[in-house]
Image 1 (tube, one colour):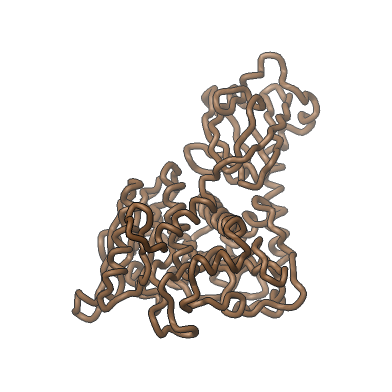
Image 2: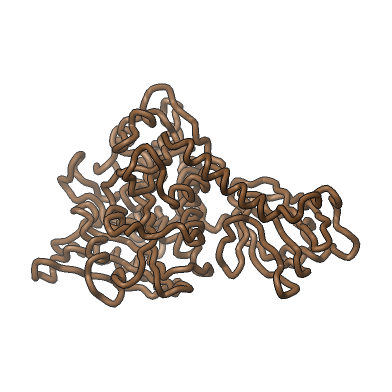
Length: 472
């Protein structure tokens, strides 16, 4: 159905790299070791490259010397120049004699080989060990924040007890939690706002209360964003009666956004960027709709191109975590809008596929015996037993629909739901139950870390992909 189109796009991606390297044909192999005097042409963390191991998932600085010198890295090693990712993994020293930047591996790299090509046509390959690191976004920090937010105790320095986050009526527990989340983004230096919208003339019963954190981009002509809903299903909510922790739906996505905000502080993006926590998602996407369609100083600008939006809802009960049966939980990442189910049309779909297939090296064709308990809108007949369910689709039911309706290209990340996770919208949706369901804290950390890296990389690459444009 979509495989031919995506294979062609990935082949095109590889051809671009080959075209960039075409002037160097015949160079690789002419010199496998550094030429005399070139030992300091490529430095990592102020040492000649190769003298010290990299740490997986952590930042490393580099310098590349000599006009015309090029650096080529594998797809799971990321280059950053001017604090933005270089999508093709190839950089060259231009007019100046020195190029500074950063290197970031994924958390799953254990060893790698980088290639330096010199202006005289010789080349060096540098084999690097990659040791254990503390990834810039990681499952351990996510779990610690989940425990702090959801645990209830008498010592406020040890736990927050930010539970019962039901929207409206008013609910002091929701207001208290919103203030805590606001302080997190503001403390990181973002221009952060509490957006309160009412539509029934009663300020004590807010229809929506969002946390909106803004980061200026290089261009003031476009905007892009990422978000998750922080409200939880109120008592008596279908299908299972509501919840009080809302650990999976959606404290998990809320904490992911907190970690993204921390990671993005020192990055630069092309467009003005909003990082948001929505409310009233459970009541019909009221929070994100209020942001997207109202006129306020920190609402979605109506005079700028809305390029893309990435949504995080129900995180962590997904591959590589296993069910009691031994089968992996399903992993869903759906781009949209999907106007033609026979063809992948969107540039953001290519970004999503590239991140999962080439950078994170996910098992894209892994299937189970039998089927999963809930299907997507258009492709269930083909994907009923597919573990890595990553494709274009019309699936809604969360805040990405707000921005998809405004022409943005979107990605929606979602783990197991409905029959695959019976605690959905129930009092059993607790952090303790999440841990038990996946077989322990370590397994939950691995699962949430993978999906957080996928979403973070998608955002960074979509930002640097001009073809990811508003469809209207």
